[in-house]
Length: 251
Image (cartoon, rainbow, N blue to C red; front, top):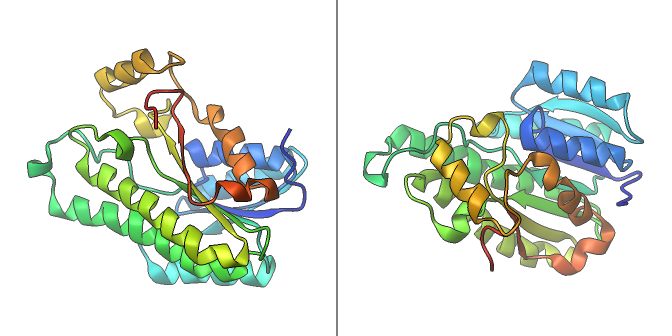
């Protein structure tokens, strides 16, 4: 079992869905988690509930990835309360309702919002928190998507944003490497949660029947991989993209 005892880890977009599942697993492993999310009521409730469970602890800090000042305020709060941190999971992203139309029909405002949150937000969070990452044991996990690896139709804004996250991961790994800080990207497929309720049933069926391990995938299915990537022993993986889609796409 992965041991994250005493490791302070920030997880963005952790009030619900994949981020919450990651947080639950890390708290079970002994981590001290900072949930950073725009959903203040849900985030505060999740932190309060998780503090009573597992071996670790949890607290909530509000953040809007579309607002640079909000990101800086989050970083200031963490610097004042935690000081050094050991991990960052860049999980927050816009996914709901960004698909279902060909690229010629994507609304410019929607495109800009997806890029603002999924790309710029990930960069700004990483920039603001990287000075707090402990040299030698700091780990960054960027949540990408296997859609950026195989290129589905009618999802261009999201696919482009997650492709950028993969590219950023490689550059960040080289820039943070001298500090012995590891950076990886996870590329899951479609998972069953509230964020994918809008996805057409045909797309879900495509994944479930073409995976090497057939059937639906849930957030809980990838959390152990995330937890390991946050350990000191995961440094040799730095710069890598790790498909976590049960064998839908082979590298």
